[in-house]
Image (cartoon, rainbow, N blue to C red):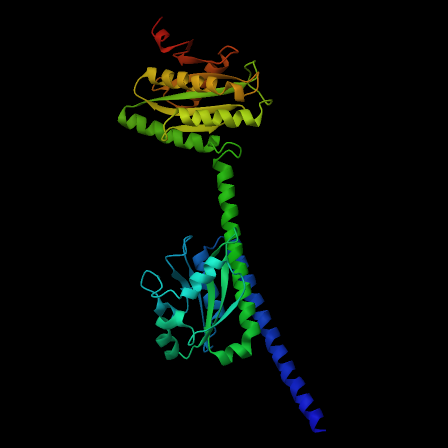
Length: 368
């Protein structure tokens, strides 16, 4: 009979524990759903970290939650978010007053598991031990924070007392796993946002500017040119297969990539190159005089001739040049350069649009 009562008592204790774990799980799940909603609404990573600390840091609970991070080289450790108690271990600029060697080791080893640390017996936490003893903390659970490249960029840490850890290990580990999953989601979101931004501003194949970004940047160049009385040139680059047309969809990607490299090398870093269609590029350059644009065009065609063996046999390049302030607005300047390129012959070469005429060189500009 005594064994029966003992067994019943044990089962009741286990049932109470299971009910407590179920309650903790439901609470953590509710917090995570709240975080995920904030994540989809664009909340920053730091604000989410602070929100996690606030949600999971229960009043009177003998545990303290924090997030620490480091740079790619494993240095500059800082406390990104934590309870007021943990923040005592950071400088006003959030840098950690002392970095336990264990964190550096786990970061370099790229260990992704939850680790338990006996803080008062571990020499790497010596500087922290007076603070830990003062607040009756002798253990911690830490889990690496992993970015989308599977690199350890920091840790989620729960400082607590060993007795509380033994009682609430399931809940604390569940909490760590949940928040680290949420943080990975923020990395994934940031990566997707960057990719979307790049897809808006950069051509996927060549990495050159998309028309929207080129137009915006060239408008800024025109404003500067008006202010400082400068000259600009637009060079339209039409890649075709021996017949110049408005539509060329049969140019190999390998040819496009080779020609994009040549265009990059033909101008200065502060000039612009954009890809406007499968076979049309536009270059925006600052010039001192009209001959400078011709020099760039000749240089570009010469470099293309040097890589001719890498291109398809029928690939040809036609250039069209127009000028500011001869054209005071971007749209007519762009159309003039494009029409000049189409007005060129079927072989590699360039035409210069100047007051409605198409000239073969700057020497012809004043030959009325």
